[in-house]
Length: 527
Ligand code: NOJ
Image (cartoon, rainbow, N blue to C red; front, side, top):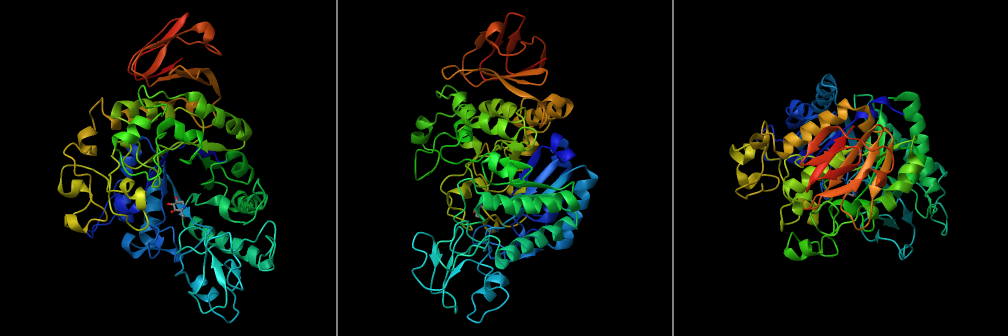
């Protein structure tokens, strides 16, 4: 296992919206570099930067036109190399976002692939040579000179790269070990090598489970591809890491990933923690109807139940223990921001949990100050309902809240216009702020090996009808109570050793050798 992951805490940056350094209204690489001290001082020691490569931006950069070139709007490759260097000087590792399942329809590989005359890229994507062949799959017809139709991996602008079919049912479906499928894999490894040779520390991998079509239930053929990639990492880049967007740790970790994200998918245990309100299919904003349906565990008195999370989490945790890590996230560029439904007080308790669970935690930029989800924004670059989560970082009370010197109407997205929009300047140094809570939680995690990625974890107290959740981390006992009432538990009802000395506290707690009381909306670590 890569050593630095053990104490890694990631900060995710959506480059469009973090800091504009040249006044054109959109964030850029130099803007990120200028805030590395801020990130480090908060206690984060690793970054994940969303795609920053050349792209027509029909899906915010997840439609890559050139994997080896930084998009002009973000700066140059040299700017990114400088970012790697400056980050490393500060002990910060940097992951880029790899999109291996599809490219932009404007990628030169695809342009070649769409030609009628056979060429080196004819089989780089999934094509069928007669229309109507892909009855059950999203495909595009009528766009290229080639006599064929091609499969999509996500949006219309994202043709699926060809890694073969686990089970080939039609003659146009190639095997995963066909030369064309192997070439696609090798081309993606070449992209990875390009960036790692220049100082990048690995990748967050987009839709990592999507490569081989008609794969087995366990996705064995897709796993095989990643095992092959992992061999390259272990051999040539032993300090670099692969983190998957897969949401199935037992599969992704045996496929070779170092970490796997838990995601905000319907039915996932993760959702029951923070965002259990999307029975509103249109997902149209933070209206009262959504709030009244919210049963998230971390929402005060909303009838949440930690066992709904644990039922899903524990089997996965056990399956990957000692082999790889689960990454819990505060959110990402695809999820509604937590602040949409959770108050700063609720967030503090939630963050207590996030930063003391095993595995490698991730925080999305702005969540440290409780940035809001902005309702009803017109969709931007394929963002749709995700757009409200991607607004500019709020630094201070200067022009455009310190994000950019451009005219407000030229900003990539509008800023939170509410009078009490949170910002970094207001929270720095203010002891009870969310930002300072994040800082002290990260200080705690870095100072206690037991709280880090592979410290032991065991449930100490969890019941469906009780808001208190206790868990052992090595020799420490952590407790969260998101509800409005204090909860007392007798020592004999706690699995493992009860502890009495308070090491860290948000809210109130009282412990002796007989019992433990965790106050309303409180988080405690005992030793
Ligand atoms: C998952 C990414 O997180 C999302 O933003 C993107 O739209 C899709 N994959 C397609 O690449």
